[in-house]
Amino acid sequence: MRLLRVGPAGAERPALLEDDGTLRDLSGLVADVDGALLGDAAALAHVRAAVGARILPALDPRGLRIGAPVGRIGKIVCIGVNYRDLVAEAGVAVPAEPVVFLKAPDTVVGPDDTVLVPRGSEKTDWEVELAVVIGRTARYLRTDEEALAAVAGYAVANDVSEREFQNERGGQWDKGKNCETFNPLGPWLVTADDVPDPQALRMRLWVNGRLRQDSSTAQQIFPVGHVVRYVSQFMTLYPGDVINTGTPAGVAVARPEPKPYLRAGDVVELEIDGLGRQRQQLKDAP
Image: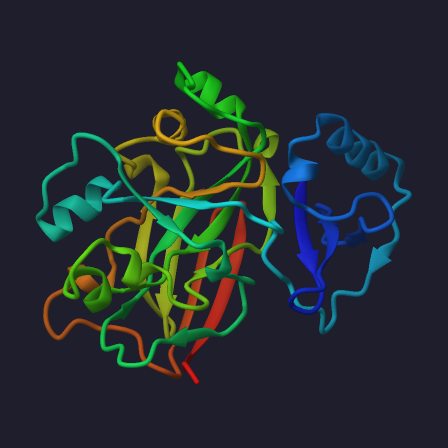
């Protein structure tokens, strides 16, 4: 299933996108696409049954904003330096364990919403990422198989980053990762049963029509199952939590000088096979 949330920011309604492109209204069936739904197997089965019965009303998609596909996210866990091609491009060491940091849920915006270039920013960067959405409470998972069983589904994320704030202003990475609008998510949450192999997904990103990233989740150093299991050793994961699993080669920070960092007016487009496409225009923060 492709689950999504549509409507004005802060007032989105749950919806479902069928294979033929028909948008269906789920608001008469469930309150939202959030942890409460994703952690309730019976509720998800009810949604699937309604889809099969073709009883869900259609929505007119024209002019309808698409929001982030998950509401009321508890936490966003991010994995850094997790692609072999990025390690080779940047000339850094392969990490012995996953590099973990957190991003605030209020960085999340819809897939086509405006991204704001922070005040004083000279090094705003892009990162196409596979986002993993948790579907059951997970702590101290023992195997990668258990970890994959805890995944509700997958989505596209843009882990927007300000590299000067991240790397040159002291402390941890938080200052460069948590600026307003720095985590476009969506357009859909594709349930795990419709993603046969999360390690075989092509991912691409363009800036102003120029292809900047073109890779695959097959390049991940720590695959999805490993990442979810690893994170569960250090924090409890709850339904609706999101894990951004890292970005491949092609980010601005790894390119030769002058590095093509983002500016107001730039357009970023990104996609992952089967998970949909995003498009953001950048503007200066007010």
